[in-house]
Image 1: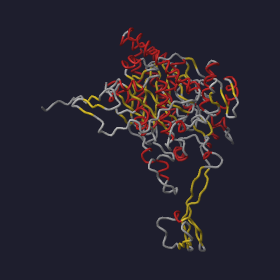
Image 2 (image 1 turned 120 degrees about the vertical axis):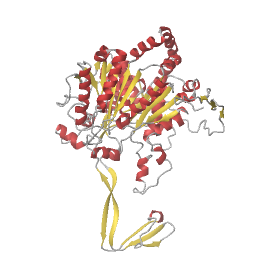
Image 3 (image 1 turned 45 degrees about the vertical axis):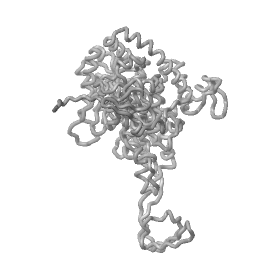
Image 4 (image 1 turned 90 degrees about the vertical axis):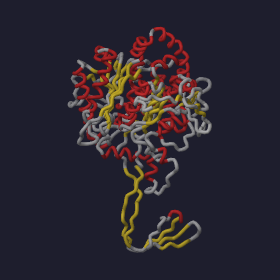
Length: 625
């Protein structure tokens, strides 16, 4: 696994540890603060092993923790938006107006700034090669008047302050979501401890796949946002904005610049369920035997004025006025913004966020053969629509089906007792009044059907916000952290469960709780009826299943091979914790265009790949001759 969200880096469970910080032993708390301080460029690692701050002062670990702990806490998770456009200066905008000129208007302007089609009534006189004088006669004149609009939403789940993924490689004006993609996938490979080139070379190149995308596309200035604003804003479209804006571009970037994969690729865009949709593609490919390794994930960077305003006008976001009304406040402070997202409590809307999350999936035989770390297993992802709807954004009935099927699979694999006593729910938990009622009713109905009396529920959006298509990836990363540390994060903004929540059989909690989980249910309820629930089971439960399938000897051999993988992974994590990130970005390397290939009837040989692509295909349709 790899990535980054408002809580920090995914590998090494850093982001997860930030959400349970006070429940950790002092040594792990200090390690988390140190790594985040380095990530946020507050300090840098010295060759001597100490740290250096921006003024050149040398600090030891204890000094860094004492000096920067509060800064790290204040500048991670949900908080006041740090983009200057959302601050006191306001968001740059234009207001359409019609001037009624009662006299001639004369002005000078650069020749290249004149309209391509100068109005017939304008008189233009050349001053020199660059400047002209324009005279406009009296009458009506349509203009755009520049203005600054106050931001109506000022809270979001932003990446840790000071961390800029585009500075870690030659980004060449990549949209933020794609720069995050490069970091997230690199983090995933580094955490795996596997040599990607060696892994790739032992497989048929077509046994590898990448399914990654997002829910909105790249809508910042480097992507479709800048493209769509170019005419009205007086700018020029660039050659990169159109192609880099596509929603499947994270997958394209991974194939071209990180993995060099020629296998299956693509993305399914399903609003807030997009991560699980792509996870389902990878799972089905592996179960069918078509692929043996699949990287899946999402990368969303939607904290732009236009996207925020779009969600606000829907009534979906927790805007400043709604937050004030919720707590009867006249002024919002930084601490109020940090508590903007309140799943299953009295709330007023979700908090937008940015995140990138990636998983590396393998079939079980290959995982054992390569000595891979096993962080968990995903035996099923279920997707269902809502059917007839009044409003396209309103919740419906599909989530009842997805969760019920996921729980049925868990019961069949792990047993009813494991589901009743050792499973928990990672709720979609958007912090909207509608969600708290509808999602809790889904949970309640499934709990009653399976005899569950006190089902733990957590909602990681309280910490990191709603990253749109990446939301379930944030939930998945948190679940893997719970398996590793035995603690479920609480919903820290939950002062009291709202009266309209179906809570009789659900266990809500504000503080982290110890819990030895065999399974977690990753739930997503997306706009348009894009419902999905993924079942993820713990490493311990996975190992028991693998022993049953492959035998104890195979497991013992895997554990021996895993030692090398774990050592490589630990080395990567130590380097990353010091703020030195190993980002893979291979632009223009190993480019092939066709003439370099060689082909037989049954195989295709590609330079740079040890194994050929098998051209044998299954034919389930019968033969005519």
